[in-house]
Length: 147
Image (tube, rainbow, N blue to C red; front, side, top):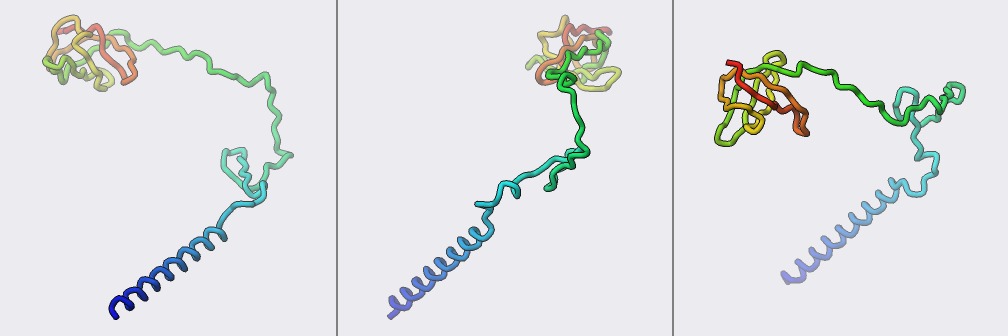
């Protein structure tokens, strides 16, 4: 008798799950956007760059001369900074061969590698150096001790 009772419960559970699945399917079908017209799916951009559902006003249309459009960006000239900078070595690991210099003016931390040093440096040294841009940021080169 216990078997028949558990079988009935399992069948009720299956029927309830089937019913829930059918309800979810009907809800998805009701909320589906399939088959909507093309116009309801369009989004317009107004003159301020915001998205809107209303098409733009043709009276506010501005004509642009195609010849005035610049396809590429002109070369930007880097402003020459002070080529020779000074700063203090605030960390240098001689066993690993790298460290950081705290710039005297900007107080930014600049990476330095032992291969870019003209002489051995250590923590607390006042140094002169030049910088170069790398993919990871500025790097000190031609580093030498001032005092």
